[in-house]
Image 1 (cartoon, rainbow, N blue to C red):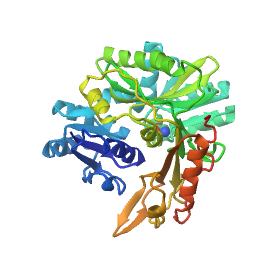
Image 2 (image 1 turned 60 degrees about the horizontal axis):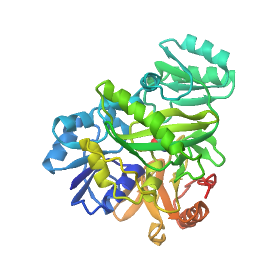
Image 3 (image 1 turned 90 degrees about the horizontal axis):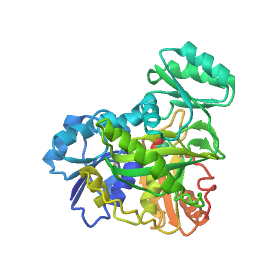
Length: 416
Ligand code: GLY
């Protein structure tokens, strides 16, 4: 099978790494890819957000399956255009991807499907109304409706913070419409379902670490690390998420004529009343994917292909033993003002059983340099989370990047 992976981050490197192990693969292309994917695949320069350019590339290279990593190409209709051209694609059409592109649409789907989620109110072009509601509620979550590169959600713990968040977000393009929702407490997990429009299989539960600092402090980031599987959850919880969240969401989208074929990511709060959806994404999570690709034993290529073609057999995936941990190494100044262009040294001295996924890297001659905020995800799977963490941090100790920083508590909340 000839496969094209779209995107250039750590998530796409991890997908390419997993797909490259499949006996069904004959050729792997990444567009645009990164220096990490260049070691596994042929990187092809293309604007991944230009539907016509992606279709032309897939046609000219006789690609059998396109796997779309990021949300932007999905929202721009890349999957629609590929499907119209008769090319199998793992990734939803733009209308279904709107479950991530619009928080208000996601809430509408959840309400119609009876999916458990936080109570909410939507304010369109009414910042004064939103401000009054925020002041009255105090502790509340303020969300800009549209895509905001991870900066569209503020968890406000007082009326002052809530009002400031409404003012701040309503100034952004994504915040013309605001969703204000109940602040839920509990343990957070990410559950990703691989879907064929009707049926799905679940990847093991994962946990992301979104804040920049240890102990979940400091500003939000794209994600500073993850681990999977999350062990010690209530018996039956994973099945409950499938039954009460994923299945009704897929059914509601299909009923509206927008079947979801791709990775449906549910960010969940495990409250005392049961799991509640915090957000949906229309794609694999980053950095969850980096650890999930180590945590799943099966060949995922036939599963992704079956999702794309609407022929998924709902055989549960086999979870690999132990726990996979991934620690993101970020460049100086991330997330506010990342510095780029610094040398990355020491990668060649890492043990073979530590897997490093590239994100913000580029080659200049033979030297690897930083080119973005999140530079690498250093991953290891071991029998226990503690051993996996130790392997990651020992490996990071061998890396030399001026000004690099990383969280030291990734996976510390893992049980088992
Ligand atoms: N890890 C969160 C996300 O991918 O949006």
